[in-house]
Image (tube, rainbow, N blue to C red):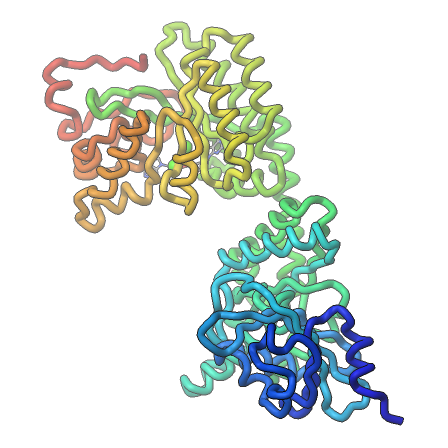
Length: 535
Ligand code: C2E
Ligand code: CA
Ligand code: CA
């Protein structure tokens, strides 16, 4: 019995705008809005090699989908670029027809590109993978789509590449990348983690064994997969953070262990380690098991400390950076920031000379919390003597999600008599947007820029521009990580107001006066014999 293919297609994909049936890679039949979507009418499509209608860079991706179109299993949706100048895209879902005669039906709709175009064999770098994941989570929240993160490993792929000629290795990479992308939702939500390992976001309705089978077949080396379900129910932002953390931790530590473990072992270990650390951190925060270190920030005009930055130290005494990142990912940061402000205010209250001024770091995540701002208001009302001596540095370890709200909170803090500083300026991509939308007192130029000044013999033109911009906005500037007299001189001449770094003093367990490296002190101030004062 032979079913009318039109009926079959129509039944299967009633929602598509164009239905195309392929056999041996050629169009057998096209039905629907071919002219509008493909720019070619239905009759003209017939007989054409399907992948030739696509942009060359996307042809291997289509071929990867076709190679593994198993009967009954839906593949896609995948967004593909069409051949031609005008940058048109289509979304394709395909399925092998049950007759098992190699016929495949494709449901096609017009689509928008999901992100910047990828060359054949390319995958998005880690950072754009995060952006794509974010978009997907948003879409998933609206449509109820269920997603999971799949970590895929191809046994011995790295070694295999090493044995091939450069051309063969490049061809293998195109094949692997296309196969991995063909498994991802939309065809671009995939990234490479190591020579053998990849991560992708996929829809949860297809059995993982199916994916593993297809990948093994296309790449011709054994694939294995570890899956992390991502519940959008807990909020897409939270799912995204869990995903980012799992990937980063996996990248950082999952591969360090010797001998090499299987992917599942590595992933499980990484999840366990993460949970154990997050638990320990939660305890450290709630029991206030941390110390404070203080580093002077000097006024470049006088060479004396204007205030001290408060830096947290946990039991190991080392850089708190990994703990801070973890606290941000696991929603412990607000409590930590709050505890540090509390102790800092106590320290200010105990300083009977009232000269000390302290700057605390506040995560970009905490600054958007209403509760946090209320707490600060209450604390400062209780300890009036700390008023005007507490400075806030908003850090960029986590992006600020809601700038208008952050700005309202920053204005509340300024209203309470505090200066507010934007930390890490230039370290993230959003620094200028922050500067535009937040009204601030101080901008701290990221240490990476500052240290570079000496490395490349740069003259500080960039820093000078930034200082000019800040002056126009009535904002003062700080250069951090000033380690040498040479750099101090460059930033001073560029018009920077304050400096901080090893040259003036390392973080110490008490606020100490700043060192006075002679060449870094303005001649005028030295002659005037400016006295050390934190006022
Ligand atoms: P940050 O706010 O930019 O702090 C400056 C970091 O640079 C500190 O590292 C400090 O010890 C280091 N540093 C100071 N001078 C020099 C120098 O001349 N050369 C070099 N190479 N480094 C210098 P630390 O203490 O490890 O803190 C790392 C980051 O962790 C901080 O960066 C901040 O983002 C975060 N952090 C530290 N303490 C806290 C805190 O109490 N709360 C919050 N939310 N974040 C904190
Ligand atoms: Ca800081
Ligand atoms: Ca900084």
